Image (cartoon, rainbow, N blue to C red):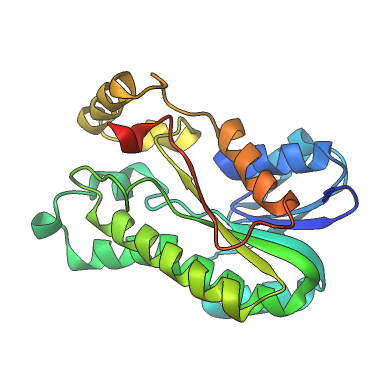
Length: 244
């Protein structure tokens, strides 16, 4: 199923995996809508994407704002919501062992990683075309986790469980999940040095001995959008991390 001419909504499309996905979709002839919190970053991203691109400022963790976003957006064909667990250095530094983590921080991670996607589906699905799809974001953590990631692991597991139910309830709209491993994005620079060193050690032990790239994950997202027979699929792209 070609993406040419389709309208794709990418919330979190101004950097990292979202920007790579928007670029790849536009190169295939899709009409791309990118959403993000910062207007200046959206404008910079649009210049990089080229082609037919719309930008809309949105905080994906704000439910009324998400409802208004999709009400104003109108009909489209594919959706993905990509919000990081900790979008800045201060948040990343608070990702500690479960018993040491502030309850509010656990809740923040869940709001970023789980509820933002729930809002996207709740208000976006009624406006999706009949042959459209949703790609949700999980991670490798539900299959193989490491310390400090209890909150994001729990949120990812919840997303995968939700996707299986949604694939039944929303059919014929397809619902799939992308599950990246350790990916080098601009946000990687927010990770504390000790944790980044752990990432590098993990990468050395994988069959693919490096961190992944945003473009490699973007390719998986677009595959799940294009493949009309894929639904309730969790696609692991993790360099073999789950095997180590």
